[in-house]
Amino acid sequence: MHHLGIAEIRLCVMHYCMNWQSISFDWNHARAFLAVVETGSLSAAARVLNQTQPTLGRQISALEGELGATLFERAGRSLKVTQTGTDLAEHVRAMADAAGRVTLVASGQSQAIEGLVRISASELFAAHLLPSIISKLRIIAPKIVVDVVADNSVSDLIQREADIAVRNVRPEQPDLIARLVHESSGRFYASKSYLKKHARPRSYADLTAHEFVSFGNTEQMLGYFSQLGLDLESGHFKVGSANSLVAWEMVKQGLGIAPMSVDVARKTPEVEALLPQETPILFPTWLVTHRELHTSRRIRLVFDLLAEELPKLMA
Image (cartoon, rainbow, N blue to C red):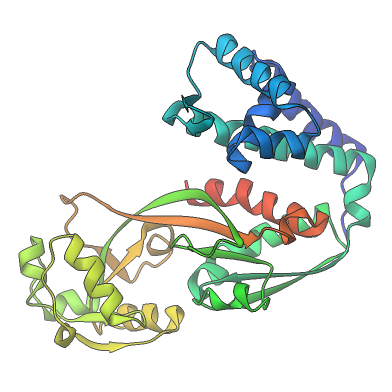
């Protein structure tokens, strides 16, 4: 098993410090800001950081002054994060995650973090994107045991069958923490063999003359297509499977058309993108975990690594 050597540790620290030097605000102010964003209020953030609300409020005001930007809209005692604040939070969170991992690696603590972490993702996602991230995790924390649950359902989190889930829909359950890590572009795809037998569609209207492959929940897909202005019926779906690998294989074999993110489709030479002139479809990627599990060191480490590496793979 390969472990990080001192040279690699130095590179990690150097990379972090270079990023840090490009930031002009005080880290304590940034940490206060992030705590308010993640907890939703000054009082909750003050409890998390073990500080008083006035102190936290002064740190937020100082950060806004340093940046020359409004990060929160104040309405009485409530705070609503602005778009600028939302954008900044992603960068501050990435800095905090990177700093935490550098500290773990440099001190050797990550080598001591151990135990099972179950990651739930769709079959396609689990097959195409997770393996390379797990390889990095094996170097950083070799005592963590990873079990990938290839499943499209969110119930595995609710029933504690998984610790972290990768989903394309944000869950609404209040006990879950969700972080948007990427929005991929997507298009409709068909195999080259399918296009040899059927006229290539030139518009959304043309798609109504074609057959589609269902990825499990046909009614849900119809609702999504309707939002795109595509008027389809259940009769357009002649084949399908709740297993996304099987459904995508059906598309590859020429059994119909289906939407797919470019991250997966570009690894599939058998298919071609349709309607390149149309606005791409958006496929959001959410990382989800339980609130209480997010305090576990091993789960936090895996969660943060996924949050950092997934956007790189999907960029």
